[in-house]
Length: 249
Image 1 (cartoon, helix red, strand yellow):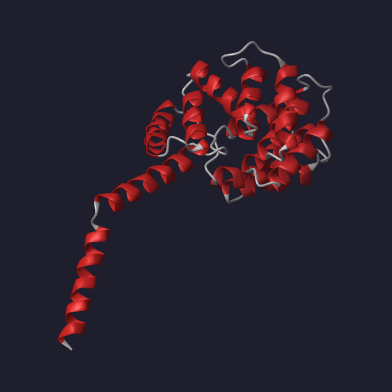
Image 2: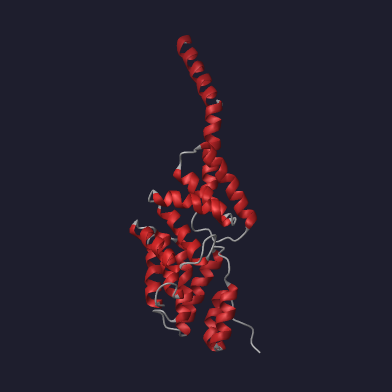
């Protein structure tokens, strides 16, 4: 009996020593920095806030330091730099990863060429990167291609084609693609610009607001004014937006 007690005590001390060992603590710290980095610098973030991206960069630097050979760690670190407008080092790093076939890096290179971030604006180059990323079944590239067709950048403007790409991106799991549908409704790209279409639009945008997406109310204000939408058409939309009917009189 004493032997069993001694073995149990020894096992307990061994377990405690392992849990409290420096290696265990280091692994826990690495896991925490990786999780924080992945969360802050993920591809579906819609935040234009330098303080936010400084926090992301700090988390991703810790992740990269712990795992210097990790492609994901390097990618998220570069993404944080890009969103901090540190374009040159970020794009140089994305080009290295893209040469290895890393599709998410191609999306950033496409965005840089499409919008002129650290590169000369070139729609053809942007489209080339996006098509390469699509060959790898990258979901965000489908969303970006939809935007190119919606705006007519480097291609003939085609709202139906834009909508098809937005829907593809959503099916592949790219959450921000869902935010494109209200714009498609207003433009009449496969949706009818009717009271029921407007209601659908407001329902989608309400979900967007609930998810904390940015840049929402300006879109509606501009479109309502430009299209001279009648109050009667907006009654059901207002009810969804505000949770009650608008005041009368």
